Length: 412
Image (cartoon, rainbow, N blue to C red):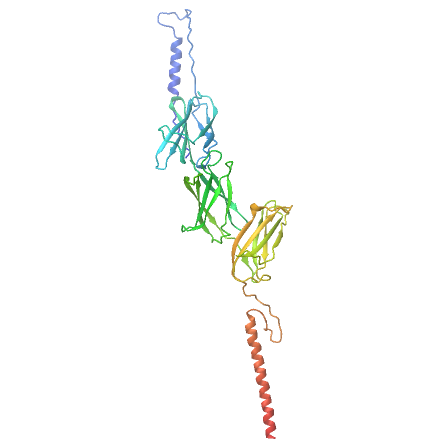
């Protein structure tokens, strides 16, 4: 936590003493004539420091997390600073603190900037405790005239692994970035990833993510949509591992809020999905398969209406009108391509979708003698009953007429 402490000291007494001293030095001694020539070889110099001390730090953010043990920062100091003390305090897993003075210098009331370079790996505190992963405090103290001080404190964490959410693909799978204290000098060679729901149940993992060979972050996609997980909060846990598979530092925990992709279904059972074109993509191809990987619809090609700009297009997937698909689970996948037909795999997306089937289709009135005979869907049964009733009544009528004619002939 950054803090500033000032103690203001008055300088009136100093000026008073200097003035009296100067007057006394110029007065003639007793018994000496004021007009007698006097040879004075001593010179008196009075230095006035008007600025109060001020120190600050650039290059290290308060509350930050880092996997790089090397600290590069600048200490800024004003003309009111006589001495500067720079120290680092490490808090171990038991909560005990261990201090190390890393620099002390004397600007002598001259404004300036001093670069600092500190490597926490292998550093030992003044009490002999080795530094490790955990919480740290950088403390810079500037002292001016009369003991007045200014102090800046910056808290930060040095960790083996850090996980950060960076976005989501077009179907809602969450993209995360993994930083680790690996190459070229760090002990982490891979990070084990596990994902838990809000009840603590494992829903994904374990998977291992190799550390980059140059110390740069590694990006992975956590397939929330592909797994068909419901919306909610999930905890992503990353544990750094060394070459022997041992844990390096504490596990890093990061909570993400996953929201299911908004999928709509019309009255004909067709499915609509938003396709988010990334910058540079000119075409998207959508495929629908069953759980065995068999294509159940003809692949749909969608052109980017902006050419290659980032935009969103709503696309109809004919589950009902053309596919006639039954209830069940399906996979929807989207691949993006550049103008040259090159696949852009970093943007490919896949999701598991539970299709609830084709709803009842409202059939318009087709007219006719009765104006209600619609031979379709739910009206089919009603229509059949009506037709059957009409035929039955007609049959009874014919039989009755035939019977009357037969009776009339016998009477004759």
